[in-house]
Image 1 (tube, rainbow, N blue to C red):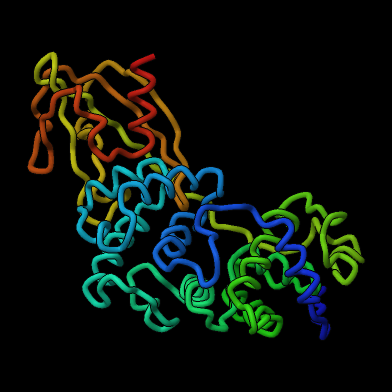
Image 2 (cartoon, helix red, strand yellow):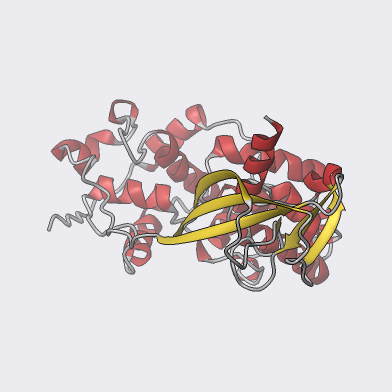
Length: 336
């Protein structure tokens, strides 16, 4: 076991100076304290998402819903359609629930504390720490994957990032290092260092402002740290979709309900018997804990599969509905 946890501190002024010169000019980074709504929206969208992928979604949401009130007045289907393709759709549903709750409880002038942020659906301790420090100047340390990676390499700590105790171990370090005079900027500097320099693979130690005091850099352990416990193998699942066209210009969609994947999104009815429909396409799609093998079959005008959660729509309107990514891919394939 390596586990070196020396009493070492990051030079706050060096890191903040680096951040001031190198921070990406992102649209929600405007002044301190940050705008609560824009900061919250960015935090939710960018969870488990690259900035390059999430930025167009952020801009689309800001254009559609400039503030909490506008988002609170929307509906789930509209929000899910805007979110389409970003994945982790629970975030989108919680986004709408949180906006409705925040607007109902606090009106238009929303300046929430760390504890108040945590009352919003989908906002846990990490997100609340980011929001409270950035928009309300409260001294709470952010502990996301970027920060934990910096903590692990800088101190030589080999506690796996996905271990049960990881958040506690790295939160203690992050809190110890927190620059309480400017907690929001400090948290952003730590996250930016992890995102731009101390990356998961091939970190750019030559450009790192704190590399001289980093254990991983001194011992050449960048590839070994941070540690990760082996993940459980993904569940294998097969889905057989039926493309049913009651008329030449209509198609049947199914709204997903219950607690299964893609809740409240629309896909096609599934095959419930072994029939010899013509196979149109096959694709694989990976979710967090599942590996999907998806087949699409042409069932023609067959109506045996219609049930209460199915609707018949004009084919031309299909893209008006929120659809899982594999359905979007299938439609593009058919167009091609």
